[in-house]
Length: 153
Ligand SMILES: CC(C)(COP(=O)(O)OP(=O)(O)OC[C@H]1O[C@@H](n2cnc3c(N)ncnc32)[C@H](O)[C@@H]1OP(=O)(O)O)[C@@H](O)C(=O)NCCC(=O)NCCS
Image 1: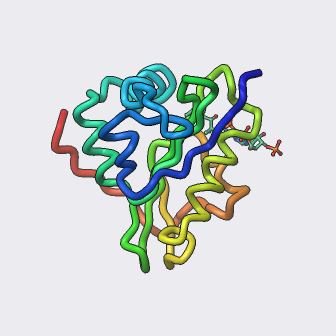
Image 2: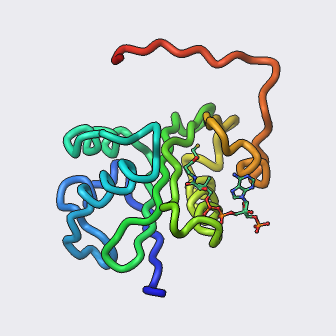
């Protein structure tokens, strides 16, 4: 198997966002690779344009990518106010490489960042992977409701 590399990007992932940088800061068409990963392996995030992915990265305090050679095979990001609340978003591993411990590494990398690990409470929303997150200390919430206002159809 080709070498795997996990990248902990700077806030807003400027190298990936502006220059498409991958492992070793090498120009790697990172945005189109990220789009491909989300299109093919994240049902809730498919069809996002590269322009909007740039905005998504810019608005993220923590961004993690996992590369296998020149391909992005894992992703996760988080937003945080740095003290009270943080939210994990868009955690995904390519189907053909699931079950190898990569998702765990992505979540651990997100949770270890200073602006995430120090906050009072961390949230995440998942459709069918809640059991996966329990190993990190997440619990189902029964005393609060998730409310959503959709601005786009
Ligand atoms: C959920 C996901 C990120 C997990 O990544 P992964 O690389 O397949 O998981 P890992 O190999 O790191 O699994 C680590 C451990 O969690 C367990 N695990 C993985 N997925 C699980 C699940 N859905 N339910 C329960 N346990 C799970 C594994 O068995 C493994 O246990 P072990 O350490 O005892 O062997 C990945 O399956 C995925 O991308 N799914 C599709 C997208 C998705 O639904 N993302 C979540 C959106 S919030």
